[in-house]
Length: 286
Picture 1 (cartoon, one colour):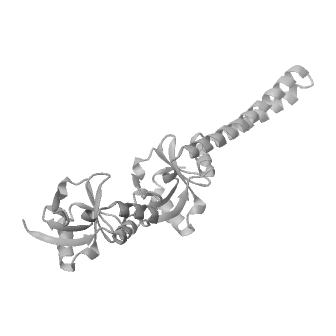
Picture 2 (picture 1 turned 180 degrees about the vertical axis):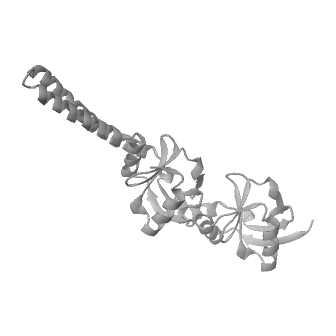
Picture 3 (picture 1 turned 90 degrees about the horizontal axis):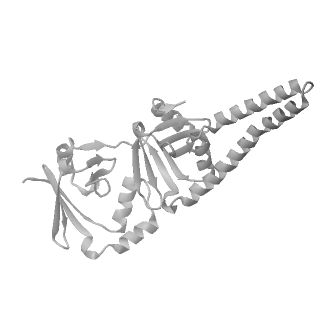
């Protein structure tokens, strides 16, 4: 088999930091230090050899080699600074353009072009998003159509009040009953407001701390959630969401009927907001 490109690298803290920024756009120093300390010296130095239909990862210290066919990988992504090879959905391998000689990089790119997906820069990025009581509460009242319920309750209240006033001179007892009934919808509204507040607190307290803070990258056809503590990535295409809804304060993305992400307009720059709205227009339901 003909070798078309090869590269050498040491899997140390600086390398992991560089790659973390390259893949995730950020890095968690505490986590990287923990990972770096857990790697033995025998798992530091690697040589990667690329062939026309496969590549081999050679552990130079152990003299061990693993081979992967391009066609058998879950997927390959070409990003702005390198390639990410997904062995499966969880296990990935990455190389940076700077790892290669220029002529070898061109040959490699032409060889794997039919296999990779080009990942362009995000259209909009929201940094340091955090799950809070306000975010969860706002999501809940939109999912359960609380606004419609509230309007219906107030209409019933107004109607029963008018009815009670009209018949007060004829039948005080019926008027008093209607007057009492007219306050029931208001009590229900207050009850559900309190209920959703309590529910929001319970949902927030049940969340794993590693998932509470994240950054969001919106692309042409998908969004990417990167948790800031563990640097895990979740990617969902807009077409795969149960529903995308634009409401008064922001966007609601329902993964399932009662499982959601919510982003407020005031978290997004005005110029970015206009661009994002164009991308989501065909997906959200007004």
